[in-house]
Length: 84
Length: 250
Image (cartoon, rainbow over all chains, first blue to last red; front, top):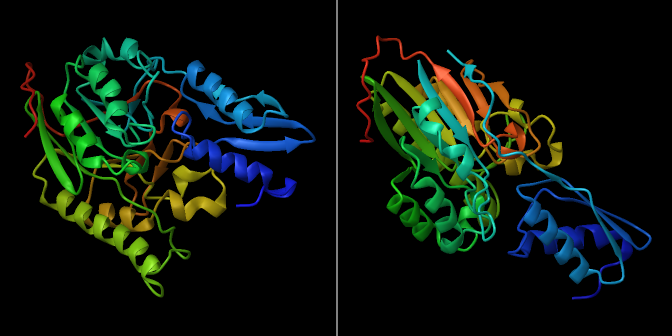
């Protein structure tokens, strides 16, 4: 398979992150500007966020990786919702 | 009141240890049953689900789950199910479970569900075999859900899904991916059979609250949406509850 053109690079990275078992996240946003990759979205843990940075750096060693993903809280809810 | 704790899209894998455990320790004080709305693992690996199963073993209330698309990725869904069932998690696919809580029968019908889209823009099982298989899968699972819900003899009936049954809980998602997020056929099945609550996951950027066309409450409990270990919904079973819990899943 040929190397993706710059126009298709964000989608190629997104696909790699989905299929890498260390990440397997389908909801990451990927933007590429010059030699910088910016990642966004929600992740379950600080460890996963760190792994995403590592995998992105492996994929694009010549790019700066800016990981702006948000770690989602897994705290107990404060209240209940009456449904019926 | 019956207290239903629910969450989906936990995406457990190596390194997920202890994410949920602190919030599960006192869950029995706050809820009567825990429902898991699929995507319990990252890639469907049995070793991934073992991490979650170890945390769920300590939960002192009944746990009922459906699997999600991630749980099928490694083609080991049967083993994923077995690992969960070994941890006393009841896994539903086109099936139902009833739980006796303080004398009230709580019925849960579950399916992963699948995609296709929503009213006015749903795919048809027409054309290539791949398209027939795609929509046919959704139709089959929706039919099974309707049967499982209809056959439930319970004071409260809950539909537990992974894919979304309505567009209302997808608000925030990109319109282009709606057909991959759910199908109106799931809502139609619920509206035909009747239910008190529908729970689903899968739509990480969606909204929590919606209703089916017939008015049944729908909650998207994908963890990135609820931003808690679980949410708790209370429902009135319409009868006087007994003072002591009976427990147990049938």
